[in-house]
Amino acid sequence: MPVSPLLLGEALSNRCSQVLYRCLEEVGSTKGALYLRLPGQDAFDLISFFGWPRGTRPPLQLPESHPLMVRAQRERRVFVVNDASDAPELAAFGQGTDWPRYLISPVYARGEWMGLLIQRDRIKGGTFDRERDEPPTLAICEDLVQALQEFPPFGTGARLVPMATAPGQMPDDLPTATDVLESVAPAPERLLPPVVQDAGVPDASVPRIRPAEYPVPEQMYGFQAGAEGYKALPWESDQTLSGWVMPPVSPDRKPGMVAPEQRAYFWETAGLLCQILAASAVALWIEDPEEIRPILVYSGLPLSLELQQQVLAHATFHLPGVNEQDLRIITRVGLPEGVKLSGAFATYMPFLLNETVQGHDLLMVFRQEDHSFSLTEIEAIQQLGRILALYLQEARLHERYYHGFLSVSHRILQSSERRLPTLRAHSLATARLARDLALRLELPSEEVEAISIAAMLHDVGTLLLDPTLLAKAELSSEELKRVRTHSELAALFLKDLRFPGDVVRMIRHHHERWDGYGYPDRLKETAIPIGSRIIGLIEAYEVMTSGKGYRKARGFRQVLEELQNEAGAQFDPGVVGAFVELMAQKGSREAG
Image (tube, rainbow, N blue to C red; front, side, top):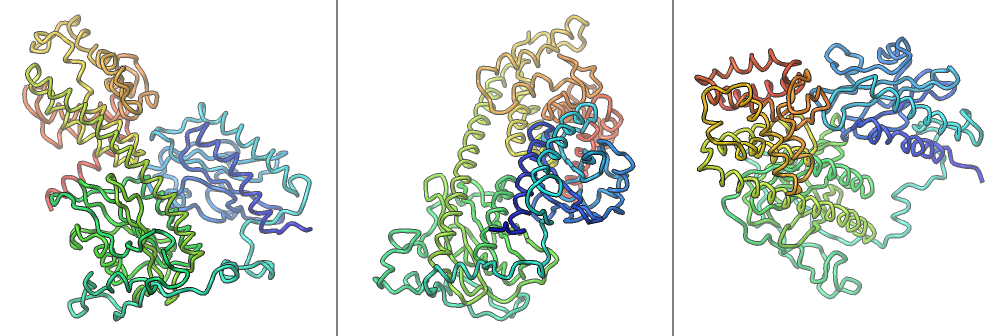
């Protein structure tokens, strides 16, 4: 039986992906893309990639004349680009971050140039270093070449074809997803009467959709009570989802946010749902008793303001504890340049996730067509919903542990107020700015949380020093050495509390310098934890602007200029640049 060309292409992609993921494990790259030139072609095709957010994926093909390919052919070995501002050939790969850094590797087999491996953005925000990163990268390239031997004409076996097969080349006998669903699913039943609404952008003349305009629960899905075969809907036992309401919550909740990792996980899940179900949009509400978080909405094509308003209206129908005007939407579009969808959703499926004390999350799948979801499609929503629910439960549990550690940290600071009255205020100010800067650098949530805790406790070691020593206006060299032990004392004091992540290490090294002349271990550049680099910079800013340790406080602009002057010496240049941009953004926001 002949092997399908499409399956061969998928097999090639999967085999390359197995090797490509080693870039994350062995080099620390958070993004990777592999291009191969298949025999008889002039261009290089994207065979496999990881880490790129949806909507910012690398180009599907690069011609040999592309400036990046020209440079790669000229370099003929691994090269590093840590400052892409002077590398326009990398513009197509730089979406999704303000400071992309690259490790580019031409791939050769028997002296013939056959591919290009692009790695981007190290895990902890550091720079690439050819001396350090070239050996593992070359090993990965060698294994890629060996893996390709499994696929002719690189090796032996069946015929190899490009992954992206043109529509005219697709075998005629391959069944479509619609064919499969129609062959196994029963005739669809009506789930929701269509919402009648004029198309176009809503204005004062167009009435906004209100929860009161929706059908009563027993009419919501079009199932008659006790109808044969529908004694209970598949996703619940009592048919009460349409009438489910959120439990009482604090009326003083503040606007919140959804962590980047949770957004990324939902975008991928929602994109898969849209492909499987031919849905128009998928929305997610994540409940939190302290915050009003935005609704995440994924759609294959851009949604009109009218459709976004309808999503809000459906959400508030199920969440009466939240006012519609307090909600906001974060959207992600599969094809941002596509034709905008308008009109109204005719069918939707609400699905309750995590109905526990800790969370009442709500998933909603929308379809514009007057075609209800079949039982097979409902089962697919259930399965992916359970996977998403499990992830959100784990994320919520992680948040609870994080807030617990923050409470412990704050209690430690409170106990110091009699002995060092200024320590708590200084630590909290440092922690707030350190968290903002970590978010600005797009670090993973776990890293952001660890940096917040470490920033709160970075000077806790001063509590173990002689108070008379800290009260002196001037210190001898011997006394200065004793004061400088505070970071080591803090690490010893906190090591048994089992803080998450690198908290203790961040605290120990927050006085290291980028040039290697800091203390206690004279670490240099990226050997210093990213959290330590952030805390060290923020502490310097906070001390200089507040006047602590100086005769008088320095001006905002003067301090920023001094920090920029120390970039590359005392401070990480990338962290300094991000901090200057953060403070400029804060200043413009306050001025507005």
